Image (cartoon, rainbow, N blue to C red; front, side):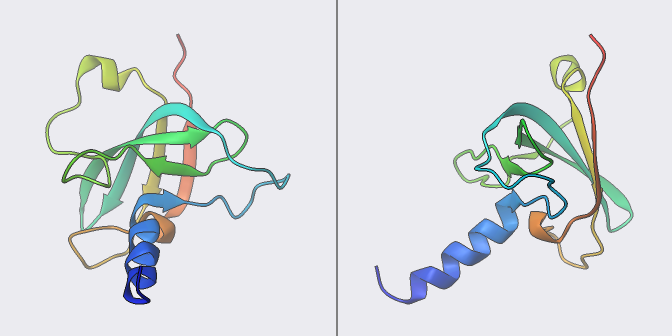
Length: 112
């Protein structure tokens, strides 16, 4: 790969990964908890399919063909509404929010 691909990989990572800066113990993240990410930005709410680390608040998008952020373009299904919820805010002025720039990130586990 040429040098230009490094910049593309950095942009891709910034848009699809959130790294918990407040994690108490340094560890290699295991992304195995399926969650819904609810982001408030541009005076609207957007939802994403993500996988959260079991030990901290870090998460990555569940990538699909032509949808690397895991954006949900429809109403949530009943099954998705039962998944744990990660909420966050973004002050971006663009159409795409970068996961790495999210603020006030919190995790809410649903009671079964």
